Amino acid sequence: MLDWRWDFTIDILPRLMVATGNTLMAAAFGYAIAMVLGLVFALAQRTPSRAVTMIVREMVEFIRSTPLVLQIFFVFYVGPQFGLRLSPWTAGMIAIGLHYAAYLSEVYRGGLDSVPKGQWEAATSLNLSTARTYFRVIIPQAMPPSLAGMGNYLVGILKDTPMLSVIGVAELMHTANAIGSETYRFLEPYTMVGIIFLALSLPTAAAIRLFEAWLRKKLGIV
Image (tube, rainbow, N blue to C red; front, side):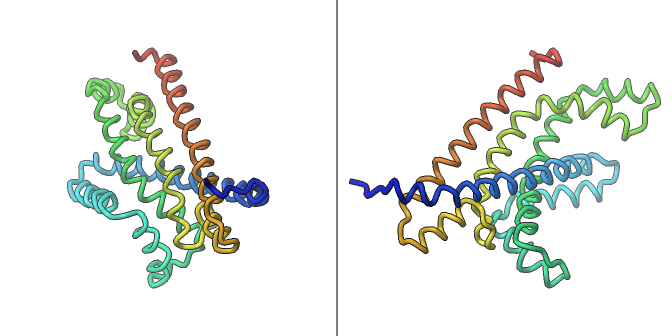
């Protein structure tokens, strides 16, 4: 029979709630970085310059092909050798943002490729600049097909925040490890962390599906 202590669980709950807030903040800022950088990577691969396209494409493949934890270590520990000294929070969010930007760039690329070429021709006939064509015509049409993939990576980034514990970021897993080391009880903190992640991930995934359905209905997309 499991030696579960409810009094201990109640005692550690406030610390886990604080850590939950830290986890959400890390996921939110990391995802915001990923959304912006991912779009930059996707657009950079569509420029007339073959050199720029090749460099960005190889960089995206390199990021996707190496572990996130290695990238976190690289930003935090190797960065200072190049004059880039960052706090664990900043380094962690940049590493997560950069990692998921590579994946989101592929999601964006698929969405951009789904827009009919006739839209470009129409924009050209109206003498719209490349920037206005992208942000006024192409990207708004590319977003609905991209939402499902973007939502999946939002849940993924939430579940990958425990990797930030390796550089001392006080998110959920780091806090659970600290509680276990202090009390020699790991059952309650680890179980609670699993329950909290479920409580965060499942509603997030459901909300993304509802938003995608609403947006498709709003835009008249079947």
